[in-house]
Length: 161
Image 1 (cartoon, one colour):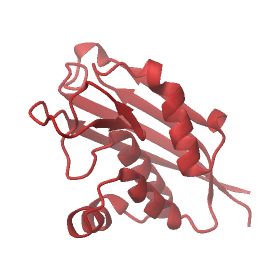
Image 2: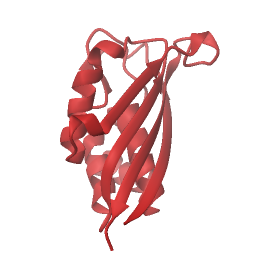
Image 3: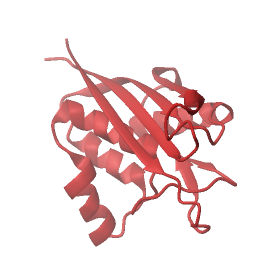
């Protein structure tokens, strides 16, 4: 068995002036919170996940491919970007995902079970194979001061030759 690990990171600023776009993190709606800036739904958790998968496949999805999906085809759902990244795994199979979310807001902990379920469904994993942690950042960074959200994601994949 071979093992690969991919590390992904992404961050987005809050868009305090946009009242029409929802805040979505890990495919879960956070009602009453300001959205994140971005052409897509700006789901920073799924973007970090997508980047981690790209770390395994070597195919950069966020950028040219996601821009084509979003700007030319009008696809703003970040789950589609992750599904596109998964297509490039070929013989590799994801067996574990860990996400670390930094931001002063919103409160992540109450939504962790829903986020884990959402990611498990998207990736075809068991809920126990998804880890999600959150920190406020103690005000030490722009994220900890409430200006946006940053996410790091680690994906482990296996291949049986």
